[in-house]
Length: 120
Image 1 (cartoon, one colour):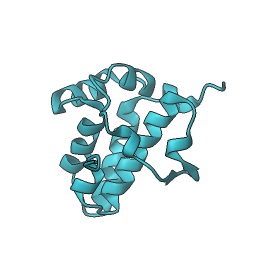
Image 2: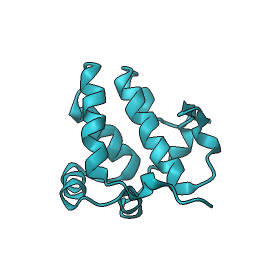
Image 3: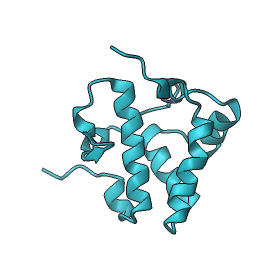
Image 4: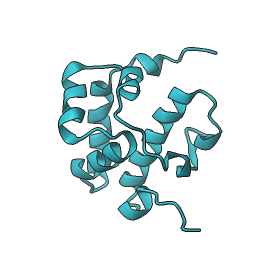
C-alpha cells in the first residue's frame, strides 16, 4: 500500500487551516476543538501539546487516547471518496477528521456532528 505524504505532515501545520476554515464560516475554535476531542479523546491541553510538539498526523492518531466508539457513524464524501469505504485505517481517520471539520464549517448542528447511535 502506498504511503501518503499527508501521514508525515504535522498536526500543527493543519490545525491553523482548520481554524481558518471554521472561523471564515462564522464558527469558533471551541467548536473545532469540541469535535476533535470527541473524535480522538484528547482534551484541550493534550491537543495544544500535540501542536507544540509538532507531531505528525500518524503520531497524532497513534497517541490519541481513544477514538470515539461511534466513529463508524461518520459517513459521506470527502475529496470525492466515501469515508466509510477508505481501506487504509490511518487515511480513514484523517478523512473522518476532515469530514467533521467540514460539518462544523457548514454550520451543521453539533448534536448531529457528534453522532449518537440510534436507539434500538
